[in-house]
Length: 184
Image (cartoon, rainbow, N blue to C red; front, side, top):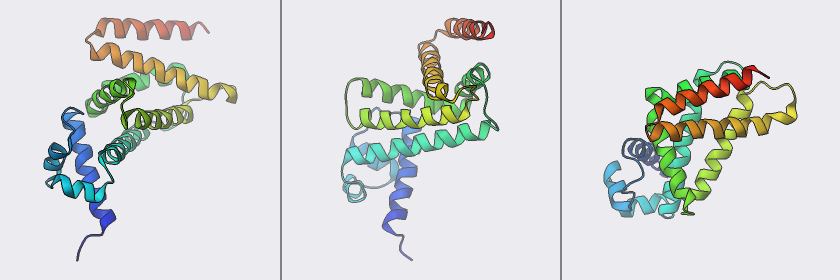
């Protein structure tokens, strides 16, 4: 029985997601992407309107996978001071490393106003903020979204320090934030 268009498209997306997590965003022209999934560039364009749709769809799938991984680690809402070190441990865990590296590449391309990376990064960031907001235990509901954004910005800073090999600074910053929060 022939696979439906939607099923074949989804299978390609899954393979493309695996490829990007392993290889990163370097060399993301159509031919290498097609080779990575065992098809031709023309077949990719049959299933996706253009390269922008292909990349946006693949990166969105990768973000959904990451959110699923995060969901598996959390059983209840946590206060900021508990969720921050929890997320730091998560970001340093081996299964998360490919996602973190890919996010840094995506953020750099988005920072240069390159599409579809900028719009896709904004959508993914919004999903992360929503996830973080749901994961936070807050005293006042109006604090939920700002604290989620602050938590995400803090994690991103730690990820950047880690990416450039500043492990001592990362640990010192985490200890500093923990001390500040304990004085509240």
